[in-house]
Amino acid sequence: MGPLSGVRIIEFDAIGPVPLCAMLLADMGADILRIVRAGGQAAYEDAGEAILHRGRVSVELNLKDAGDREAALRLVEKADILIEGFRPAVMERLGLGPDVCLARAPALVYGRMTGWGQSGELAQRAGHDINYIAIAGALGAIGEKNRTPVLPLNLVGDYGGGAMFLAMGVLAALTEARQSGKGQVVDVAMTEGVALLMSMFHALRQTGAWSEERQSNLLDGGTPYYRCYACADGRFVAVGALEPQFYAQLLDGLGLDSASFPQADRSRWDAMQTAFQQRFLTKTRDEWGAIFADRDACVSPVLTMAEAVEHPHNRSRASFVVREGFTHPAPAPRFSRTVTEIRNSATDTAAAVHARWTQGN
Image (cartoon, rainbow, N blue to C red; front, side):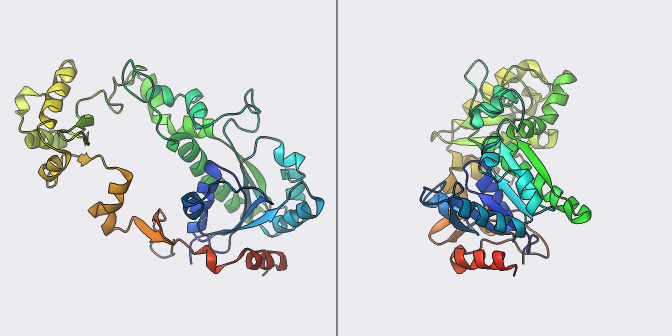
């Protein structure tokens, strides 16, 4: 049984951070009902359906129909948490806003996920991950000097600043609700989650230890010993030799004289980067992988997603598992006593879950 066994959650079908958040909570044992639009296309299909919607079943309801809306409210009465990702006021217009739901379930935790937040100048504007991380200051800090900023997939906004803060927020509110008996609304804005993720960089900037210029700092590719390098086969290695002992191992693996490459001499960083790049271009990525395999130099191959599934370390920890014909990232984190697992939703039908919830069993 997972650590969230017995927790009941209603998820209103959405894209972006809401399904990933629900997936994490389902992996930890929460009993989740996903409400999808009757006759409509659910968010994600095929592999997205199999992975992002794993561990839970869906119920089709037409939320504009009074009967189906009442059915949704009966489910709300049995729930501990509700999560939704619509624009502000959409749930209110449907008759399922926080006031209505909390009247039916006073201890309910009502999780709201948006990019801009429930209030503010941009609250009613459309947006996507790229827009949220842009105004939060993260996008402008990522990429090469004097080049266009680089998109970090949608990991920073949707998932880092969104899904993870939504999961943390609703679980924190649930803990409080079980003490007070009172529910509340959790307003999760991706812009604010991303801003909080940037805390260390704000601290460094205000103490003069971080420049606003991309690729001129310790952790943004500006240093020759914390960046990626191309290899002879066109693939890449990632170098993270920040500490002196790791840097010494890096030079040893590259066959370079430590006296000629003093780590702390910032004036020589450009020349060091050029020398390191020339050396890495003499061998393939996997040849360098073999050279650094037994050295604590913090040098790793840059893998494709397919290669990551087969990496020996990931295989030894079963970091990826196959379920129903799809390769899934395994549930995380791991617990010493309770179990996180990918549950096969086929063993629990929507009708069975609906009956269990509405009957209070």
